[in-house]
Image 1 (cartoon, rainbow, N blue to C red):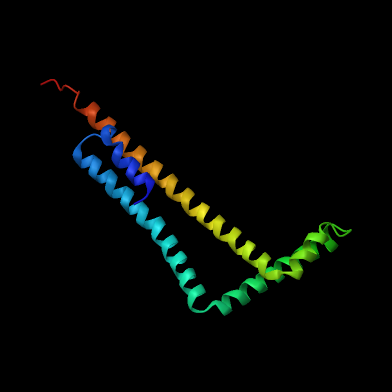
Image 2 (image 1 turned 60 degrees about the vertical axis):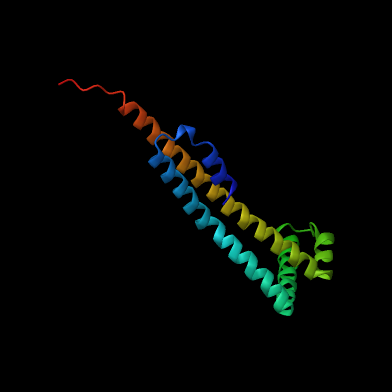
Length: 147
């Protein structure tokens, strides 16, 4: 369970009836599973692959680093003209594995931030949905029907 599910469970005073509160918690748990299981699976898979067969991963990281260096070199010479940033690019090309690790880490971090943003957005939508339902529920109890 994530922090948003725990927070939702702790702030159930504004969610109305027991049925409404249980539905809210159920939706939060589904949201957690939808977004946190893939992160756990990818992280576990990458760690297991790095432990079991590190050689292909090291080679892939090296190729990625060389690719970053070559693309940067092309941009510096052809697009920006005059060799903008070639000192940094030469360092990348001398040690492509380090640049590949950094590139992989940045890509992984961007993916994790995207997943967390989607999870948080959906958690907010769920909270608002059940808060609105509780407000409607409380207002409908105050309606007096004339006979």
